[in-house]
Amino acid sequence: MNAPRVSFVSLGCPKALVDSERILTRLRAEGYEIARNHDGADLVVVNTCGFLDSARDESLNAIGSALAENGRVIVTGCLGAEPDVIRAKHPNVLAITGPQAYESVMSAVHEAAPPVHDPFQDLVPPQGIKLTPRHYAYLKISEGCNNRCSFCIIPALRGDLVSRPVVDVLREAERLAKAGVKELLVISQDTSAYGVDLKYQAGQWKDREIRTKFLDLARELGEMGIWVRLHYVYPYPHVGEVIPLMAEGKVLPYLDIPFQHASPQVLKNMRRPAHNEKTLERIRGWREISPDLAVRSTFIVGFPGETEEDFQLLLDWLDEARIDRAGCFKYEPVKGARSNDMGLPQVADEIKESRFRRFMERQQKISAAQLKKKVGKRLPVIIDQSDGMSAKGRTKYDAPEIDGVVHVTSRRPLRTGEVITVKIESADAYDLHGFAA
Ligand code: SF4
Image (tube, rainbow, N blue to C red; front, side):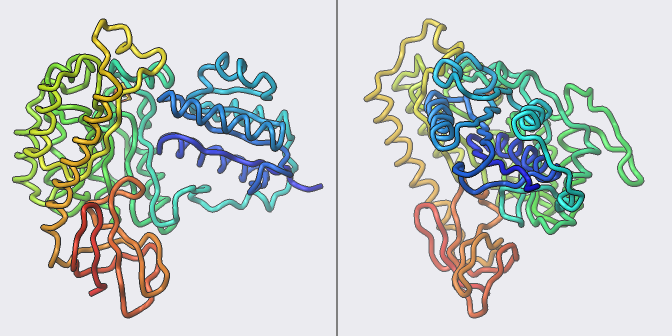
């Protein structure tokens, strides 16, 4: 009897991607085959995103296409937390489960297409099925969030912070490193809060006791001899403790901090964690310890109540902070978010648009200036994609998918996943160009 074939759609952020990887790993471990197309598969699983209205539309459209092309569809992920919204548009889906509901997704799959027992199908690679290339992997350390940012519905969808015990995380990291992963991207909703819910509970790792805590985790990951990149960190005072690890070369000199804004009033209205912190001073202090620290961030323009003065403050702050990489979003009034009912005036669409443009222009100049400083240097570069003598890679200062790349030319063929030294010869607004030294 042939193994049932499942077609899989993964939408949303890296956290959803990790959920997809876990479900795919379970499916393969149980002998299911992963189909390339909906057509001809026994069923389709759609892992949805429900964060912004545009993401919700994308999710609903993906479900619609899967129904049209296949007809047997199971929905999971963030939008799955709102089954009414899905059923209103697509009443014929087979089952709906919420985020991180691996067991429920698997039971729905078992019901729709029972697994065929084949012991050889259990031979999945030890690191599971990864959707990222083999040389880097996302390491999810917690689920949910204790913050209540007014524009965000993630805590409503995913619940409060639940940290994975540190030993589980380290075991997974070690397994990935042994399987050939060269770069770990630590992700969560709030990495700096890691372990708060577990009261920093200690566990035995090798010959030592390690606490379920941001610093302890970073230190241990830093011993694994691979690149370790920290995402979704908030500028709390204790974050400064990991900067010496960056200066020592244990953890990459890179922090992904979603600042969202710089105006104290807007940050207060956003109910942002650490909104009272003196972030500029803090960044300056970090760069004294680790001078090449790269800071990447995301910002929202046009949040209700944002004035021209607030926005100007943000632009000036960007200059001062020298944010290396920044993404910018125009505020969207997500259904269910508190920011819609705070009595703050909405910013007109054309103003949002023009602020977005001004933000991007300013950031492009900063990014170009930061990159120019790298010209003439010899930097380690990890190769993401190779066509033999020419390749695309990244420095320590750039994360995959979201930041810039290094276009490399070489006299010898380059392999994906290898780390080489590149002499940087030129820079444009977002990318670097260089020669394999
Ligand atoms: S920190 Fe704020 S924006 Fe991020 S997940 Fe938590 S509530 Fe949402």
